Length: 138
Image 1 (tube, one colour):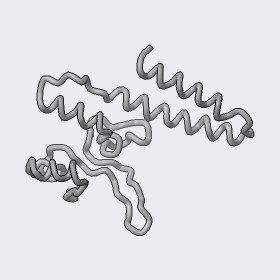
Image 2 (cartoon, helix red, strand yellow):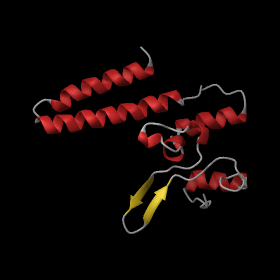
Image 3 (cartoon, rainbow, N blue to C red):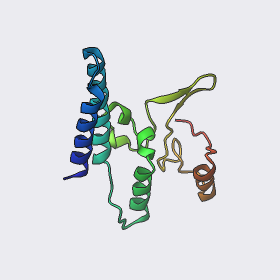
Image 4 (cartoon, rainbow, N blue to C red):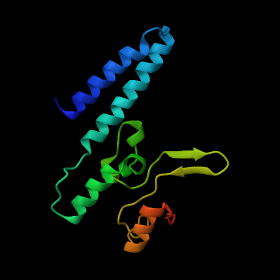
């Protein structure tokens, strides 16, 4: 059984457990939520690189997917249709923290103007280890 089949089977089993005893409207809401989740998972599965990397770029892609960077930083990912042509190019969806604002996933491509192409290795390491990120204009 593939990873996608395993996940889908798990989601089906979860939906059976969740909907027992719920009214029709609530069951429909649960099914819609599970379908949306399954769509996001299926989209993520198509973007998975292999664990063995031949180059630093391939290794970086593997680590970015493993860490979930593509989730917040690839346009369309949360809507179930990731734009792979703009992989890690900044999200069109942001997370709102009341009183602080909306924070979209920033562009972390090597582009020198809109991404992190001008960052030093030390700045990248600091951003990854302390969560202090220099905000790049998108």
